[in-house]
Length: 200
Length: 200
View 1 (cartoon, each protein chain N blue to C red):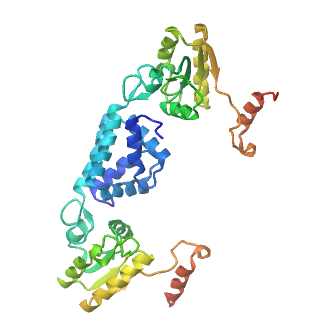
View 2: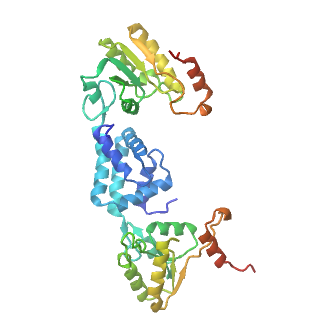
View 3: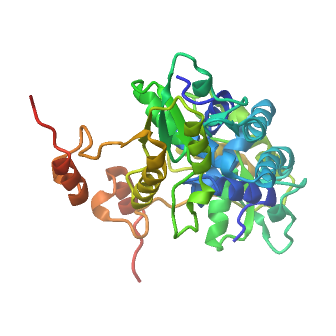
């Protein structure tokens, strides 16, 4: 159903491919492009092309960077003996917001998921093993998502790393801070009980 | 606060200018661009540039077109004696969806709004007058928005058109079909009562 002229329909169809954008929002976005100045529209198109062209994965950890090695791997003040393993570069940003963790990262590029046909060979597991074999790493914190797939991946990596003699840990499960016990699911509550800590 | 590398922050900032997009959505959109293929990204940027470059206002009615005169004005099978006056080209699309109206349109390019410093001279009122003076128009249906500004604009246009001897009407006000009387505001209910029609 083509209600609008072709250039608008084509543009709206592109906007629809963005996450969380339906047809109505996509059309509003397409119209807002028409309302922009030529300079704004050119800058918009350029920003899209530049992001795709300039953003690469860090050759060490897989985090996003516009250079060869990301700013975290380059940072000499960080603790290079700890590696936090995450699924996605967005998880690096989430952990960086906490401003507590000072070690390095390793981005897997997803999680093991038989349903999506994703196995360990599709992740940067070998790169992680090589980083550890190169020496200097004392602890690996596995921070994959608290999902079935993230958990499977964490178990797999923990097993793979065992022969390398490096300390391996997993993020704690429990009730989220500021959450409401009433709305916590049973699995989370069970993990929170299991992981209870003595008050001293 | 710049959490991400520059190309991503710049792109997210562009997405934020789109209607209804906050920082989190903008970042998700920017990341989704990285996940696209080069071809998809180029097609996206091209669609933005093409829409801005190719979409113009119809030289007759002000509706959006990628040619000189829009498909509605060119359509010989439509009733050229009726003009429906709307604020925006999006309103044309809304009325076209009804598939009942077969006349032409006239897009004002907004409504009279002293608050936003928009007067009648900023709208295509003179173009409307010229179309009527050129002859052949028998009725003008004013379909500006049911807002204070739309109403002001409707009253202004009706007054301007009076000396031209053309029949002028306004869209009916009333309760929306499928709506709930309980939630209808007083002004709408009052208009619905005033505009009540005898059941015969």
